[in-house]
Amino acid sequence: MAYQIILYLHIASALGFFLFHGATASATFGLKREKGQASIEVLLRMRELGSAGGFLSLLIMLISGIVLAFMGRYWSDIWIWASIAIFLVIGTVMGASGRNYFDRVSYAFDSEKYKAPKDKKDDPEPPTEDDLAVELAKGRPVMLTVTGIASLVLFLWLMMFKPF
Amino acid sequence: MYDVILFLHVASVVGYFLVHGAFASVTFALNRESQPERLQALENILDSTGPWSLGSVLVTVVSGIVLMVMGNWWRDAWPWLSLLILIVIGGVMVIFGGIFLGLRLGTEEMPAKGERWYRTVQWGLRLGSRTPLFLTATGLAALVLILWLMMFKPF
Image 1 (cartoon, rainbow over the protein chains, first blue to last red):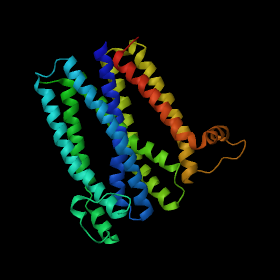
Image 2: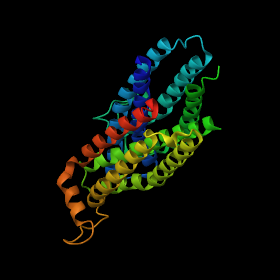
Image 3: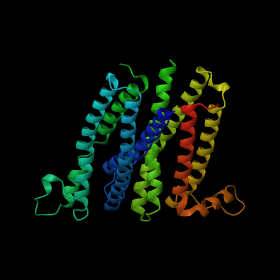
């Protein structure tokens, strides 16, 4: 019964994560479309809300997943290590492309409110509108979505069928 | 075959939550915004995610009904109860969410007294800026119940 309760928590937190992640994903697509200052600000705010909630639900999902692996004695199975590997790879890809993109756009949008990315820390001049346009153009929402969906399909398959 | 449809069912639920996240965040954002350009940006998000939301919920319902038949679950009460909860929560979301979005975005006009929907819109207006919170609470309650019914199949 305890296993079922933790599994319930694991699935509920996963759904919560997707709900919050949807806000971040739609903000990424929105930034590709919108050019006005006010629109960009509203989308950056949406992304902030999505990130905070997404992080919390991701943490619950991870902890409950590790607890389930111990309770179900799955550590000797390959599927659980494969899902951990996919999680690390997708986390790195999303971090490098997605989070980095938002950090750079946020800084170019409002350099007083947002922290400077590493390579911009020593820049004496604040970012201009041209810099913002350059950063906005670097967004790859379709690539991120395709990568995310591919890993999601793999994850689901591993979790549901535990094939090896 | 059952497993393949089950996979499709779960994947469409996940897809629905991803798309619905955009809807939910827009609803909360509308409480803060009044400037036309910002409202337009939020409306654009709704327009671009709407078809995906409808598509994924359709796949979820159809695959769920197919699973019900394949697994002989239709004799049990839990799938019918979850379908009922889904219909009720869908109604609540469409009516109260629709009123809130329509009036905030200015895409809907207030019905006159005595007109169809007048009373419902009045109920929606009473919720006012608490609408996003109300929708989140009812949505979460429905999720907790449906997930419990799906996982534990209690009756």
